[in-house]
Amino acid sequence: MLRPLKIAYVYQSISTNFAEPFAVQLHIYHQIHGLQQAGHHVNLLALQGRQVLCTRNLQVFQHNQLSESDFGKLGLSGTKFFKVIESVIRRVQKELKIPYLAIIDSFRTYDACCQTLQGHDLIHERYNLLAFGGAWASQRLGIPYVLEVNADLMEERQAQGNRERGLRRLFGVLTTRFCFDRAQHIICVSAQLKDHLVQKWKVDAGKIVVLPNAADTEAFGRRYDVKSVRCQLGLKDEPVVMFVGGFYLWHDLGLLVKSFTHVLRKVPDAKLVLVGDGRTRSMVEEVVVDNGLQYAVVMAGAVEHRDVPEMLAIASVAVAPNIPFFDGHGGSPLKIYEYMAAGKAIVATSTGQVAEVIQDGHNGVLVEAGDKDGLAEAIIHLLNDPLERDRLGQRARQRAVEQHSWDQYVKCLEEIYLSVLSRDAPGYESAGGSL
Image 1: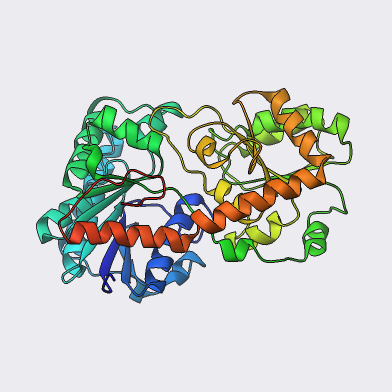
Image 2: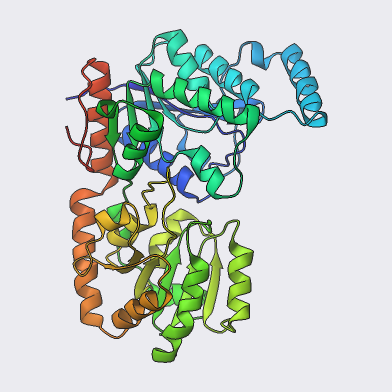
């Protein structure tokens, strides 16, 4: 059995609000919470402006009110002299349009780690573009280093129309290689992403662990007052098709809204409930208006994640439409595992890891990316067949409980840590993360 460990969870992102209900924050929360429940001492180290969170307090994920005790000590980067020099550099950088390279942010992360991590057993860092503070600190302190990679962020930014160029691209490549080389193990969320890391970044496949997302199977398995939720959304007893998640470019919500016009021809009282927020929301709202669907589409907005299981309880069908995944984004959609844990009949695009987790006709229905008519027909079929919905939902729930709970995820993390700490690093090949 693994002894209790002192673990530093490092995430170098200067503007992350951990109280927001987005996938990154939720994933970090469940990792830290699960490890703490297993008896480990876990500190979250994360940039917050010119300070660095260094806390075990999970309340930072619930509200924005941070106390002084939630922040760690800083050395040079916390001095007045350093902050004055920093302000000058940032002003010059802005006026001369010098690319942002996050060097100061990486140094501040490194500084905080050096000040606070003596006596820790391991650094677990969530990869972020240009961020090398955690890897640098692990080298300086001689602490084993595990890197978690959820996407090739250079490829992701390019797909979003923000291709890295010139000095910033060069520095991004250098820092990414440094982190990849420094890591004893790299955790990635899908087999597709592992293949990408091996092929593009020449990472040794033997040190890559495939560990997909998970869900709180207990919370999503409870019974909820669906009448109350329906009343809050202005609904009665209409069949509900629901999407829960961030409004990102790779979630093909425009296609979903357009396909719903066909659904309404066959199931005229159906409602489409979109739960979440993000950069494409205004575009989705325009598609709703352009197709005259204001009466049938409910934009519920972002909700606290603790309220998602109750919200999802009213869904007849849960949907996950995606565009074809681009290179480097072998994602592990959190929503899929939560839909499964809630026992919902799922219609999803057959892309990436989704096609591995959802078996068409067994625990959900898969459609091809971009197939508007196919998506509509799958939804109509399930809305008109309650027995099939129940059958698919029960099997989805069963798989979530057996293979995709956060408890099981944490056990896999512990195996990875044990492998690193024992200096024995065999490859993990299965999607469950087993040795």
